[in-house]
Length: 254
Image (cartoon, rainbow, N blue to C red):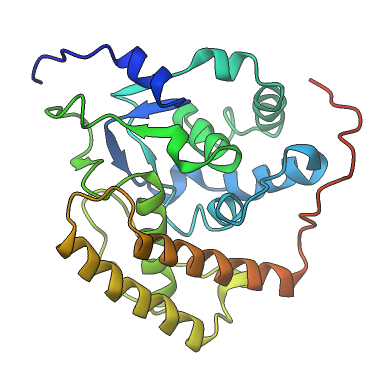
């Protein structure tokens, strides 16, 4: 690793980042199995903290299908004031612990933090540190930067999942194992919606060739919207979860 000449804590403050990371990865299914449904139940019981934007809702609803994308914990800078002073985070961790998330399922701290920040904050609050730490080698070979940030990894993995046949043979990338079972709420994905996602992906690939250094292009964001709308349409049809926001916060318990 080359010398770091920039004060990374100042960089975090300047970008109002909650988390800074250098490498990305996806997880084996057993590493995050069940976290999606458990977190959904937490938000059902605590609607004042439920994800507000379409992007945050989709991040939760397809997290396991997208192979549980997260940052590698061998390079991680966390704003501890953000976590320690966050009532929602305190309640969230307590709920997951009471449900056996750590003792029974063995969910790692960084997976738990990724899901929380991904459902509570906009993507820019999860900062890729490559421009300031350009030479770093760790547990993952997937560097962030050059158009690849956590949001992009999620959208790419989700699109790959939606496009593959239900019984496709394993062709897992080095970083992850494929999830073979198709959840009930995704089995009836309309073919025309898949075609929209595929078409948007082709345009994004072209845009990346034209602008390889762009962090998030307009066309890339259109894919995010397409994936979000797909999952939300199915969620609405299934009526499994009430995402409505109450008019008042009500009593908040720690």
